[in-house]
Image (tube, rainbow, N blue to C red; front, side, top):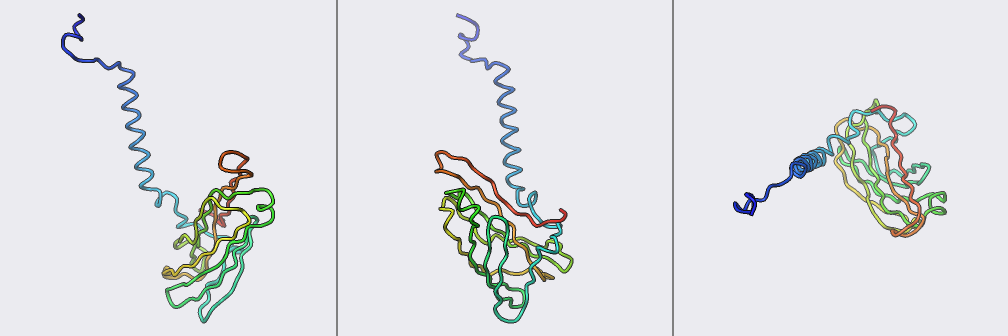
Length: 181
């Protein structure tokens, strides 16, 4: 019997020890970055292009529409001091509907801006997954507006597929209205 067999100890090769340390470090980094995701991926401090700023007017219900390459957001809102009640429908363009069968993932943000177009805050308005590209998405939210918010912008990201989840080509689509970050 070898010395290792007599003592009942199993010697772990050095390469396995190194792998375990690196893998543990990687897990720690992933957990840390995941926890900081909100801080790392915030729009705060960025500036939105003048053409993409949508006024938030007081005094009754307002109806508006915002068009992008992939979609149109038809919405209505009521501003009451620091509260915004907003609802609407996201309609995907023919370009997207005619080329992709399935929206695997979609998310729409409302981005709230000061008078200079600087981002004060962002709020998720609608997220959905695994739906037919010909469907529209409805949303409705009551949001607390940040102090000094006078306008807003929309931002979105999505993933569309030509076939089912099992196959087909995919296309990432997005719009970020920033002139600087």
